[in-house]
Image (cartoon, rainbow, N blue to C red; front, side):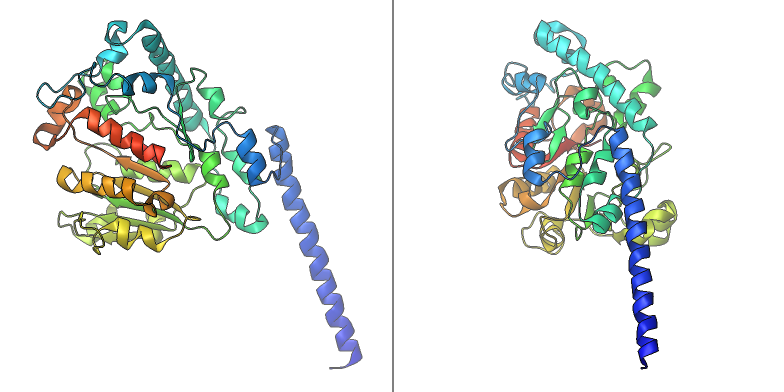
Length: 383
């Protein structure tokens, strides 16, 4: 190579470096401008974030109404397997609890509506991991806020509970959207039975736990798409995460009912096919077994990954041992971030839907969900 060739190469490298610098600076200025519009302080380290962010808690802290329910389970009749206790009365009359609790629940109902409107009106975000990989920082996480004051601004009633994974909805019977306790008609009751807008996710907290090398993983135990209605709740959950900028790298669907794979993939929106793994086999409660996803899949990832687990196989003899495994296993509770479970227990409000699949008491269910939250997992009741 001649000296002139070397000079040309140096000039090319210099020009490329300058171009990269200006493109990168332009990108950072655009992001900074958006964050400034939101009044967000940038580039806080993890310790600063923990001290300033109200949605962070080292230990689980239940909301006021949830605290009352959990300390009055026997008085409310939630320990019964014979009477199928009706729970909608806590949303319908102050006589079921106290005037203060009833007022809190009424205010919380208004908060749920505001939260739902904020989610529906929110503009879909690009993949958050793209920005985190590009910058190695978490400034982009502030763009997930549904309100300038975060979730506190949408839930002034103060009923949200707080886990190490951020804010979550309070664990309250009937373990569904409370509008099922105030249906206008049978059609409305069916709609609210499968509506997910009672769920609360702390997207900013979830985002700030991601690393540039993180993988986003969802495990669906009971992955049937045979759903009567306009949309499967599971597809609705996929789309909710995607709207908030969380794009799954892997989705594992376990289903014991024999299905034609062609039918499944035809029903699945095309955008999810690259990440989707269809496993037409039932899960087992046996610890260490290949068909126990907590062992064979969850433990193959790390604490830096975002792991979401949904369980709804309508078989308590398998589901409850799996939930207990998650509660008891010191490794698993550090891996699973979000957990959704429809627990068919004796409860009058849902007895017509659950029929013979009901097993155990509402008290036992609420206590297990509480233990899981206390161990750091953001656990939610599923539909």
